[in-house]
Length: 243
Ligand SMILES: Nc1ncnc2c1ncn2[C@@H]1O[C@H](COP(=O)(O)OP(=O)(O)OP(=O)(O)O)[C@@H](O)[C@H]1O
Ligand SMILES: [Mg+2]
Figure 1 (cartoon, helix red, strand yellow):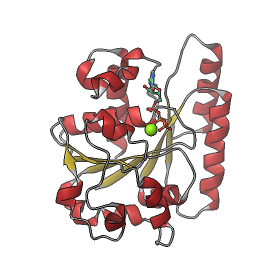
Figure 2 (figure 1 turned 30 degrees about the vertical axis):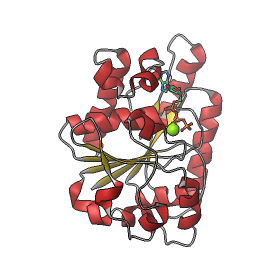
Figure 3 (figure 1 turned 45 degrees about the vertical axis):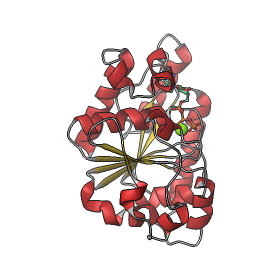
Figure 4 (figure 1 turned 180 degrees about the horizontal axis):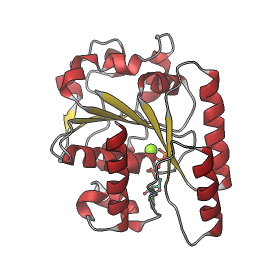
């Protein structure tokens, strides 16, 4: 069971859109995928048409007492299951405070053999929860809008991970990129030099992705031949080679 976290300190950079699309592509490729919505905003849960509530409560989940049959939902995409967000995910942060690191991996132990890939959609912050993400995940996939500020946030993440001793590899990729903007092109060229693990696929700014909220489905399903769907397919292929 590989665990991939879609993470960024910054909000609104395309984490949720990427988590949903990549999870759908992985399941289409035959992987048994669990998408865990760790964000109390519950956008992933909404996109997959599920209700934002963990039956039995988050505390049971953290204590290892939850029955996964009740907690995990199937989605309309075959092979893709969802561990929904809960409005109590703030509570999740609190509950993890006294726990040893890598708790997220431990929580999923009962379903370890049921999934090939777990994708975590993370909220944008450095918190107790993110420390557990860093210590549990095999890699952090970090969406980056090609602007100067995003570069700074990525550096901040690198500095933070250098300070903690459970760091996992960081794989940045560009999202919401506009190749007509010189700044975007300049930043993309610079960053690729500094980050050798940078993914080579770029996700363009595309209105099809914005429509995910209306369609409540992965873009790869309702706009199969759009530029965005094509880009996400490219990103998934690259990821699959690294997993
Ligand atoms: N490639 C894209 N092209 C156009 N719009 C996009 C793209 N990716 C994401 N968006 C839009 O940008 C907004 C933020 O995207 P998303 O919710 O995926 O980001 P996020 O990083 O998960 O945000 P948060 O930090 O709030 O969880 C959404 O309205 C989404 O539809
Ligand atoms: Mg999100």
